[in-house]
Length: 164
Image (cartoon, rainbow, N blue to C red; front, top):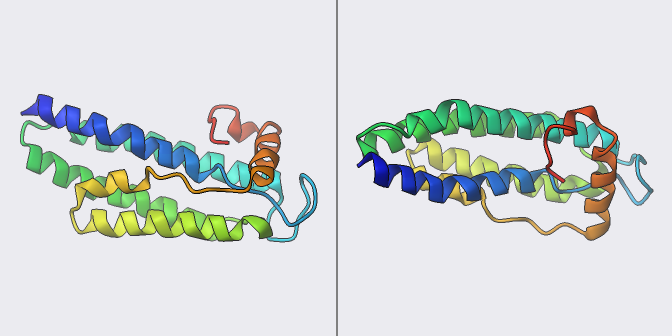
């Protein structure tokens, strides 16, 4: 039973992590160049916030949810993993709602917050499969992605996490 549980977890977890990394692959400022502002953050500030949030999120998932999945009883393991993941997703959502976001990134950022919030709600209801709900990648304009990649290269918090 543990083996099938592990395979199920392995099937869901990479997609979820891809979604986590895609969450930070969004954008920058207003119509200006790198570092310009028009929202409440520069490219570098936003990249730093997103890298820190993604790093903590992934660490928390590996540290608590993955071990919870190692129980022999699959139903109990999934219930425990959903409970733990709900807390982690909710923390991420809270963090994303309060971080500074460049103006032209706001629509994409808000869509990501909604996606993670929906997953947290489903996890709270015990829906283990909500972990896979974040695997879809949002589409961002290429110029915004590129500006954030450049900005992330200047941010220490992004050195350990490749999210852009």
